[in-house]
Length: 78
Image 1 (cartoon, rainbow, N blue to C red):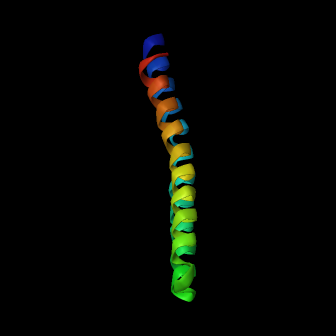
Image 2 (image 1 turned 90 degrees about the vertical axis):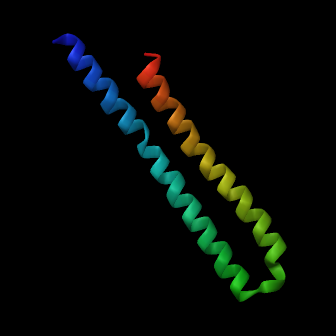
């Protein structure tokens, strides 16, 4: 009985940890949307916008990867 409760708590905790990945997905979408609008309005700024967009995407995805690592730690280590 107690083992089932602990297992359920681990699964719920891993699911809650992955909520942070939602923020990473939204961040990537907004970053790409803004860069595409900027490139469409001013094609001469393509290189500058592209580099900044890639940096923003990398930082946003890092948060999602951290959330995935925390979820894996909750599932398999604890």
